[in-house]
Image (cartoon, rainbow, N blue to C red):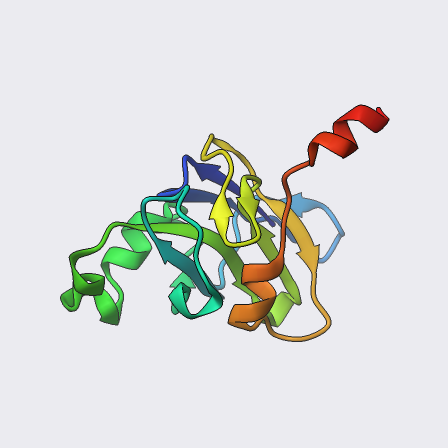
Amino acid sequence: MGVTYNDAANANFDFTTDDSSGAASIQSKENAEAIVWQKPTPPKEASSASDLEAEEAEINPNDRNLRNILADGPDDEEDKDSEDWKVVAIEFPNQDVAFFHPGWDAGEFDDVRTSEGVKVDLDADLTANDVHDRSFVASDDDADDD
């Protein structure tokens, strides 16, 4: 399983399953339950954990585009108070994994480029504070150490 973020407003999914012989197949037959963590834009504006929203979604392996999936969700009518939302992370609780946007930096986006999500193995379901406090952007100090 993998997630590629398209900017911060969309994502595409890559599902693989093993058949009985152990061979990888890209075609999964089961929907994946997900929790999509989002925040309002502008994406460079710092936020608190209370700004984050978790939306449950079922991801069909034949429709790997997140915007299509969220548009069909129960929150679509509310339109999230007409705000433009950006995706911070996509959690798959049944697989104990989440894929964070690679530009997420402790409450704000550092860079909203298209890139592979950062895989994080989970011991427990994410909370808003867990999501808010994560950072995947290298600091200037980290860059100097290379």
